[in-house]
Length: 141
Image 1: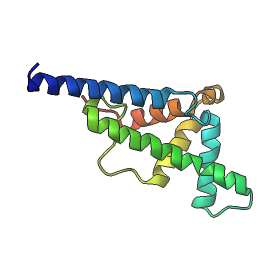
Image 2 (image 1 turned 180 degrees about the vertical axis):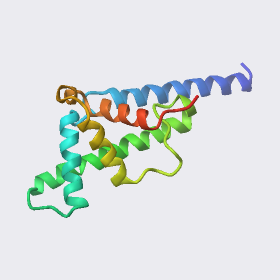
Image 3 (image 1 turned 45 degrees about the vertical axis):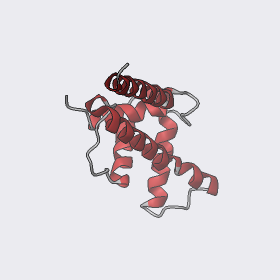
């Protein structure tokens, strides 16, 4: 096998490994901490204490749980940036180069989740985030 063929084989194998790892990460039930309803609550709690200063209704445990929202969203965005770098327009969604503002992104997630029927909120939080982001930031082929 010549050097060129080895290079092509390596790139194909590398893409396959990356795809497997990302799919495992996004679709693994053990990764997801919650369903859509829990994600909605933690995002609403986060906005209440982070941007509105309303801490009266939140315990210390609630403050900690509320931080799952931005962390979960950030992890999804960062992993997709890796996916975009490797696969371009074949990514799950295509974010602009300038990362969306955290508060605006959280509000977008909240509004999208509130628009769903209650029974749909039982689905996995990762599923909801991927659906929301792929709808807002589709990859144009």
